[in-house]
Length: 195
Length: 266
Image (cartoon, rainbow over all chains, first blue to last red):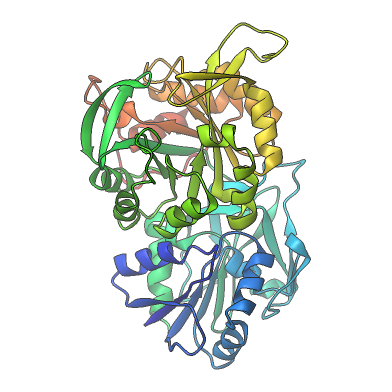
């Protein structure tokens, strides 16, 4: 069973719809103590609001413990960003599972938020990755990994940025896998094959 | 590279997609969830639906239809109509929409844009504007006035000024819907679309008037729009020819416009 962490301002219902569409058993996680074989942290809204919400719900230690036990974990959009140490958005202290920080796109150079389908190239082989394709992004901020080997996929918006990060059992997608048509559903399906 | 988006737009009445010309003479086309699924499978990049009767009938957004669409569509999905409060926004997002479109209600209560952006992130809030060409005046320097309530009431507000204010208030996108061109299938109003796209740094959506792929190409090449709303040309039974998304994208690609490749050959 895949647990989808549900907090105010997240878009857990969309992720749940996508999981059910591909035939995966899934449930919303709203409080500590609910078991799951895999965890997805969806995200819309801001890094600060997300961190506050996770702390209020008592889910931060739960997430750390699950990741520590090797439970496959996927953060989506802001869910990817909070895996890093710090976000410029709201000057938020994040989970720090991955080294690195989250910065804002340069508004003088490009329209912010980035909104739409962008090409992602996957830079190494991975059981979850595609060869490449178009995925739906909605973000004003992007992760700058402290360790370049974290980058699994990259896209271009005023220069290359980290579109997907992964290490061990922990994945993060800056794009919305649940809203990227068949390409996104395939990534979700492969993530659900991890155990 | 970020591609240009094609957004299929549905006006919904009693769960059915309905088609009007210049905001009048509606005819039913198909059940909303069914048409949305067809459009998704046909490769459209995004879907927006407007619950056009919610305000007039003084009721909340039709959440059953929002849920039915969200269960079938795995591209971004925006909902407008009947959203007055932050709680309404939460209900619509929780029913599976990604974005909220605010229009007349935001003119009456601009603060709702900020409230929505603060609560859900600015990417959730699309400011949709009904614009009509008028004489240039001191009050309306762009020559386009904002209307509300299905283009029935004029506000005296300048379209470009309202767009800039909407951006400052926290809107994540601006949809420029031309009252003059809506349903005419003779092309978007490029002038006001460009004026708004030049005035703000958030993405701008061209809306109202697309009948042929070259109309969409013109919006992308001539105005700085990031996305284009299409409806009649996709599914209106009033038109002799409807276009598939791959047909449209082939023509956009040939014009040098970056698009997400079609899922299926045309």
